[in-house]
Image (cartoon, rainbow, N blue to C red):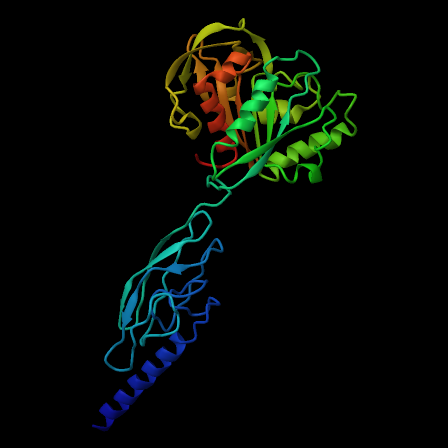
Length: 364
């Protein structure tokens, strides 16, 4: 009888200690109910800690624990992190996904053991995630060589598209020929640089530009380091093609315009079979008849590192539209858009809209 009394007292002490440890959760990440770092808990445990990777806030959706016979246990309120169960707890682990706020699904514990289930994280701005909200687009369209009469139509299209989606509106500014905004401070408020058919050495051989090297560096850092976006149409590849801005020509664009068919030449725009499910092609026909001044580049863009060809010309399979992840940023480009008529075509307008959304890590 004496040994049974000692055994019972011992279990009672363990139960009290378990309850005390469970009550220690203060949202700081130390021994909280889910065993995770964050606010609130999922079930009640008296031991075991885990940590989340990604810095998200753990938001419990359930989980309960029932204490053993010896010792006391109260059923916790999910998410309060104030009532601990007795016994030996095993903390679960959370996986916050790719960023954002993970949602933890708690398991059911027996005897004070709670096992947190898996968590599904939201997606943030980095990697393949998406974001939402307003942004600003800086349009470059300086023509030091051939000036397309469709440049104003391009500028208007980009501005009009920015008013279509209340969740992701954007405003535009047309950059001056002196590229005054191309400094770290000047580009800070923009999310995208859009190229409406500029031509010539706009950065490297422009008499109106002071400190061309600094402006080219600001452009590169805007994309690669700041994680911003570039998009362009038609002669965006017929600009800075003589070696004066090698990062733009080789890394960002993949090559430059070399020759073209006559404007108005009929052709079939076909989705690339490998990348036909890409978001930029959403809602577009896999094959569509069209007319344009079809560019041919100086080399095969598809063989350049990191580029994905999205559309080709049916007759000879030359690339027409492509994208790339460039450092922390993204780029989108299509050879289409020579004449004013192209900017009235709904498929072309939708292609440009999809390209802007993808490059800006938006969905729409």
